[in-house]
Amino acid sequence: MTTSDYSKLKDYILSENPYLNTGYANAFKDNKSNMIFARDVSGDLALVFPSDTDGDYFYLRNDEGITFRERSFAGCTPAFDDTILINMVFVLRDADINVLLSNIRKTLVSYTGLEVKALSANWNREQILIDEMSGADENEVLRALQRLDNQTILRIRTQVTGSYVPNNCSIVNPCKC
Image (cartoon, rainbow, N blue to C red; front, side):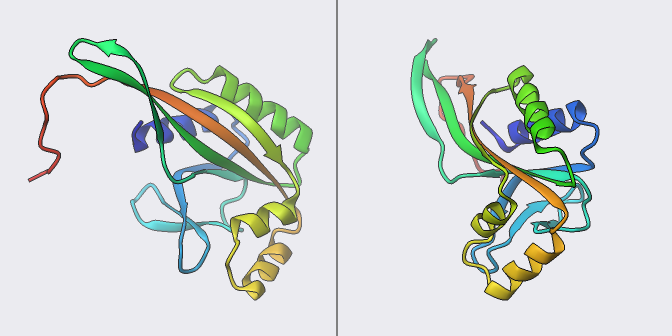
């Protein structure tokens, strides 16, 4: 799996759910501020959570590490299933949580680029905010809770699996020199 795979998933979610203004793939938690950041379309770092400027949006935050499972041999090398856990966090103004959850589950089931399994969901706004901002300054968390007071927040924990089949049997220099 590559970062472009996550971007394609993000784009698919946006295309199937037109009420979402924007989405971010490859979001990560900054170890210093304990806020969630991602690269925007211009390549600049953007604060994505908590954010009160993006309207109705979502982000995909990868858990650390990908697991590999050898699947079968294809030519001279084995093929692999690459699996990663991704937290999908949706932030919408005053949404019906049941409709949102149903829409996103339908979207994930119909996606064909990767195998995406919804493992669990949480829509307790305060709990999600505290979890996503764990380690952040307490005053920052309280300000975020106040700013996001009318927001519906849904976090879906997913397992995403993609296949990797090497396209040649030789070792290639990975440097872009």
